[in-house]
Length: 353
Ligand SMILES: Cc1ncc(COP(=O)(O)O)c(C=O)c1O
Image (cartoon, rainbow, N blue to C red):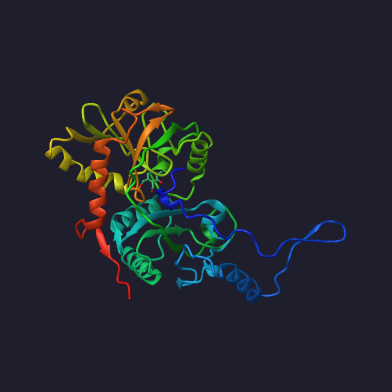
């Protein structure tokens, strides 16, 4: 599976309730009724005792602060994001105590929110400050910061008119990040793509993406590739895709029908260094048919938590010579160096106490 993109690799650790359903005389399950909030909270806290905590901190505008107790990292069931999918999200990587490309992700987050007609409860500088304070409070040096804007809690109707205040949630996920050096297999997805309106905003409706990822896993692949209705390469379910042609051109699909990935955009800024060195001929966005793409010399996924993942096989056919491409790794090095020691515009030092 494409385990690292979108930080999907944190394993579910505590899912089962410690209270087993009781069976009454007639053989029916009797569901436990908690006598108080304290009883429930103490049971949930007990579940975490002696266990690693993959989520060291959460922020909730509904609570109005940062929560360090995983038992309390919850959101309201009447939140319009929960029952109607009326929410947007984004992610930024925490790398060696720096937040990588936070401002670019935040700008896309607010563009997504505008498309979803969600007004943030806070202006951008406040959102940014909350995210920085949350990361500092988490003490996490390597991981992912995920955040959501929602129409907020209120009622269970379709219209958000009864949701008086939008909500902002964020969580820090402890997660080790290392450069991907092994190549993976992909398949062409048979799950229909989202229409451009929904694919270009990072909203929480990821069911097509989830089904596309599951389809890949069922077929023994790491992830999948979407092809649009015109037959052009689109993207992966939570990553962009890039190709190095046999003529040594780096080509990424146009972003008009897919998510404009922050990492893909940064790659387009950094890759001309390889043109200067004479290793690449050109760097551009463009339409690629499946045949053109399958005939590429090298292929890779691009996404913030990778940042580059080499692809060596597609629909059981090798890409290029079937090995991790040299230029793929050169591009990976460029992004990796940018994360490790790039300019201050890209990396924000977290003020841990
Ligand atoms: C559908 C989709 N495409 C592409 C990307 C890659 O974007 P980024 O580089 O900003 O992580 C993501 C992840 O956010 C995604 O969910």
